[in-house]
Amino acid sequence: MSGLFGLGIVFCVLVLGISIAVGIWGRRLTRNLADYYVAGRSVDAINNGLAMVSLSLSLTTFLGLTALIWYGFYLAIAIYAAFTAAFLIMLVVAAPYLRRHKTFTSMDFIGERYYSPRLRMLAVFIMLVVSTLYLVGNIKGIGIVFEYLLGIPAIWGVLIGGLVVTAYVTLGGMYGVTYNQTFQSIVLTIAFIVPLMVILKRLGITGWWFPPLGYGQAVPAMVEVTPYYFFPFVVHPVWYIAVFLGSAFGIIGLPHFVMRYFTVRDAKDARWSTVVCALLVGLVNTSAYAMGFAGVYYVAQTGIEIARADADKLVFILTQALTNNWLLALAVAGALAASLSTVAGLLMIMGTGLVHDLYAVIRPGMKEDRKLTLSIWTMFAVGVACTLLSIRPPEFILVTIMWAFGIAGASLGVPITMGIWWKRATREGAAASMIVGFLTSFVPYVMIEIMKMEPTAISRFFYGPLGWVKVIAWSMPLTFLTMVVVSWLTKPPPLEVKKQVDAMHGWPDYREERYHGKALPITVAVLSVLIMLFVTTLYDVFPK
View 1 (cartoon, rainbow, N blue to C red):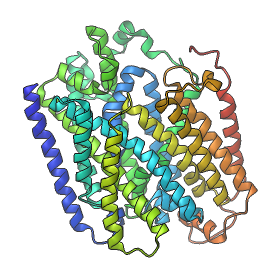
View 2: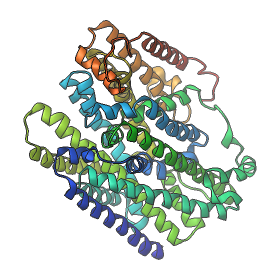
View 3: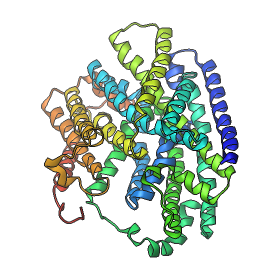
View 4: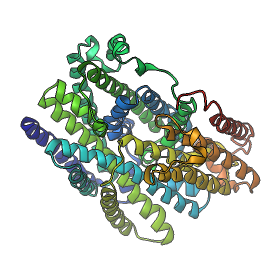
């Protein structure tokens, strides 16, 4: 490990040094709030797409997804497939329309579209909860990186890593964050795929040169040594529906991700940045499955046991066992880059939301330089707080991230989606849906993950591996249904608000009949009811 220590320090210092330099450079470009919050809306599609890749993958993929593939087997296929497909849904449902709205954040969008400062503040509160969950998972990953590199206890890795990253992201605004994420996206992609190619080659797989497909050669041997790996539908089909809903609307509801669409030059760049992101995310996600597959195959062949507590270190364990210190140091540096990019984006949205969408609403008329100073200190304070929360991290990184997706999708993704596509969506409907979505997703999180309670009244619907994921199959449809019913029962939005919908879709004029029909809300309501009913069926067919 001495060779790893020296190389790892060099690689990680290089990543940190470049990141800090880019942050300082970005700070020099920042002249006003628009520069600080959305990089002056000047980011091109390639850079924005790469920045979105680093936000999307982060340590969730680098460590968390590979751990779940190794531990959860076929269930992870649904997760990475749904997550990749979610970008196509974002492309069709939200990306260009959010850019045309010309706001800074998701919370800003909700406040303007639903003509309510109170809803804007509610959205800030939900954003803080979701972002904290996301941060905790990624800061745990930073702790893992420092633990593996320096050999120090995980708690010190969390504290040192979290505080170092917090200090770094306060140096620059959105310019620094964007170009750092572009750089880090390239680093994490290379640092993940290159060691994986060597791992597959050492396992005797001739298709090692293209990991997303190359590992398929080992399938016959895999079936022989681990036949249960490919069992289909061992859990209730609603599990897969929940994963799809959580991914599709979770990505629309995640504020730090949506914020990237407000940085591009126009709606065209918003579309193309999503295409760039989807292609690279698909490449890395399929490679992550190959990494998890290699872990299962390696354990089955050698008989070496990997402790459940070490599942998130699977990438490092395989790289150390089957490659050399150079590639292991590269993997460590890639994991660090992945964590930096996501934490930077999360702190950016939290600082912006607290100051621009909360404090500025409570104290209107605040000067721009005051907002800028408050945003920087807020980011630092939030980073310190989340680092302290990460001292007791979840068992698996991906668990917390999946909860964040579900909560964001139900409480923010639903009102954003309906606000884009349905003029009749009202302030009251949005308020009701956000409250219902948050309570039906966050309360189960507290019960299951924090209080370790078993929801006995409905426990039979949450059995099996990661059975809690099916919470999303209740929460998301109920939130959509609430939005439709309450909007229909309340007064329509003002004309000025309905004009926003046509403007988001690029129409130069306004027509009342556009996006005002009954087909969409009726279809949404019917599908929501059917999904919720389906959850209660077939529970005795699948193994517990």
